[in-house]
Length: 168
Image 1 (tube, rainbow, N blue to C red):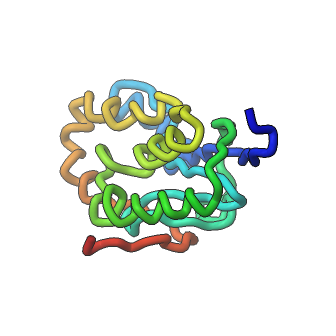
Image 2 (cartoon, rainbow, N blue to C red):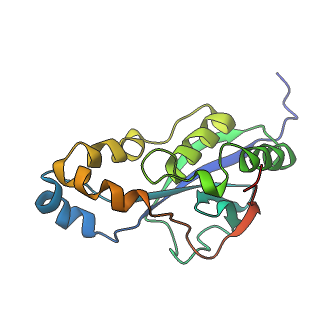
């Protein structure tokens, strides 16, 4: 084992887009308790990386208009260098995670952070986050709201788009 290999810390920043309203309103509207409407980002190499309707973006940690995260989860360490990571993100931004491929329920910030977390650390993000869309869509009210919610493209202001890749 090479002891000279540099390891980088990888964190998951978790934001509740509802600012606590999901916890109080979900039992009434959905008939089940939701603790939040989750937006997630990967923090590594001193930057926060996230996916939204504009594509893959970055900013200083906590630097979007969402402010500081509600929760920080330590995902582990990676030996992936920042140079390789940026090449990886650029590739994702030209293909799988272009802005025009964003879908609130099927292909969103949480699918992005889950894929990136697995690439960097071998670990997934918490399942209560990745399972949220199916939790909502399993309710009658979720099915009624789906056409409206499908048209929403969340892109927290304050980030710099890494690769627009819209015409790839």
